[in-house]
Length: 197
Image (tube, rainbow, N blue to C red; front, side):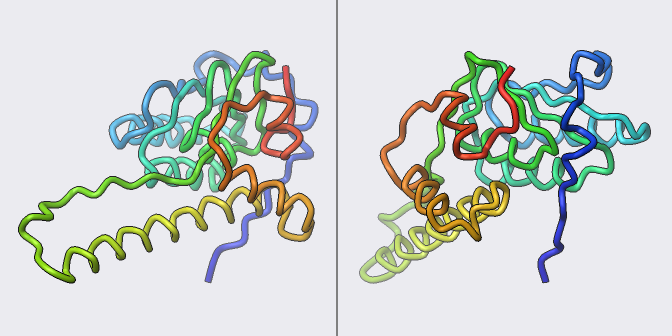
């Protein structure tokens, strides 16, 4: 059974992030991959010894699907409040990871990209014959579809759109539609942000 996590944003609503000391800031920059995620998780664990907020500075064009979900879970289940601030870009897996933060902020010049997960076919197809190639490709397509629904459900749950049919349709159209660069105002309208600074 899925663990229900209720994020209480009230204590963070009026948080002045300029009061977060530099030693409690973690940079999430570049590609989201295992070595970078491992370093961020280790630092977050170290900073969890004190109950004060941690600031994650985002400037990432995304990266690996599962690593983005790992960060999302780490942030949302953190023992300390996690504030995510986008200074630059938060594309793809970075935007998904941002949704795990207890408070989500972006600069007015930040930019975002949201799209369905991609998956590369990494196999030696010439060694496969007949229907086994088709079966393999079908399995990969099923995995991509499952991953798409996983991210879509995270977004819908995070923005409270599960009960709001109009917002649900808007989010689905954005997610499954043409990939494009989004402004902080658009992201705020979709409830993927709490504040623009």
